[in-house]
Image (cartoon, rainbow, N blue to C red; front, side, top):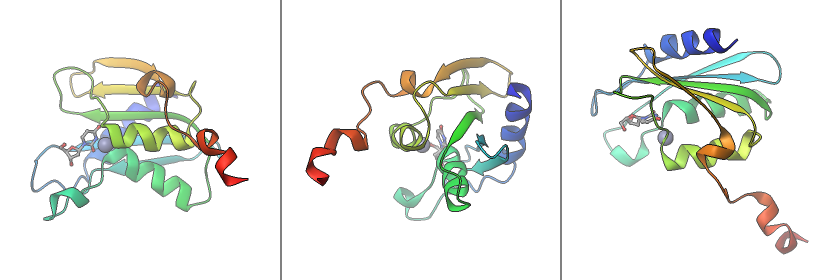
Length: 134
Ligand SMILES: O=c1ccn([C@H]2C[C@H](O)[C@@H](CO)O2)c(=O)[nH]1
Ligand SMILES: [Zn+2]
């Protein structure tokens, strides 16, 4: 499944809308439902509204009723395996267990296998304000 997810992230990358950065990224997320949700980065003329590939994939899964995930692959044309931005790390932490595997790759085929917890140690989460919601 690792190879399949990486392959899917490469396919997802083909649809990236990146007229501003020209830096295409693809992501493939395996939901607990067994389906693969692809995502690409989608930029905007108002730069700050751009959405990263991994967030696109997560939002696609969540919008289809899937809130539990099994694995994530992300691919970009980087020298070393791509490094997700801070915003994406926080969104990934919201929907994926800290032990969930994340496969960071590049077009050369370099692979860094990591976990959600390693990408964002000490992530702020709903448990942090549980008392305030009582
Ligand atoms: O892990 C990453 C890193 C960057 N980008 C996007 C954001 C922007 O569209 C472009 C350049 O930062 O790459 C992603 O989609 N995922
Ligand atoms: Zn991001």
